Amino acid sequence: MLNRAQIPILGIAAYSGTGKTTLLRKILPQLRAQGLRVAVVKHAHHSFDTDVPGKDSYELRKAGATQMLVASRHRWALVTETGDGSEPRLEELLDRLDHKNLDLILVEGFKAEAFPKLELHRPSLGHPLLCTLDRSIVAIATDAPLPIKPSIPVLDLNRPEQITDFIVRTLALGRPASAATAAST
Image (cartoon, rainbow, N blue to C red; front, side, top):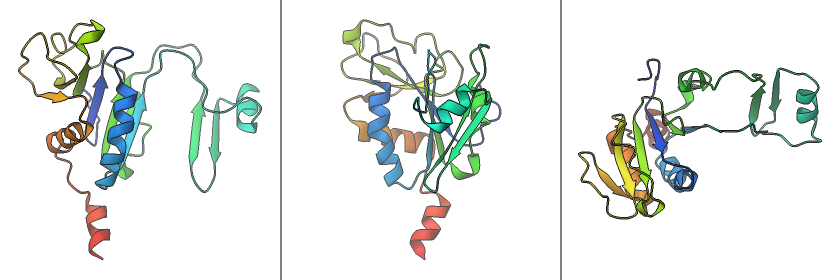
């Protein structure tokens, strides 16, 4: 289990092609509408770039900058080159987030690590249920009847508002104090 998590964390675990990113794109606006500040940590199984070839940040990183921070009045991004080392552990990445400005961390991927997760399952894809081997899965969202009756909650994958409500209720996420204070002034 993650030892240093300072705020609630929930993973979205599923096989590739099940719809993890699609679900996150649907529930993030709903969580935001409730005044929650949400970070997403996503695992990539391949190399990736966040900047565009030809842009200064890309060229400077390719020229040898180990870290490249780009900032504007709207956002900032830090790209860190890590070489060809081992896969990062989720706990190491969580340490890099600004926890004081977050109410919730959602994680896409890292399904082999032990932390609370929501399993997405589409029986039509033919994959086995992850919850039968992973005790850290707290609920399943599916689009069809399951082959077994799990002892954890089963949610409708086609009803993102139900999943959002489950996340808020289960993780005891109320309206953050900062939002409540701002609303009352």
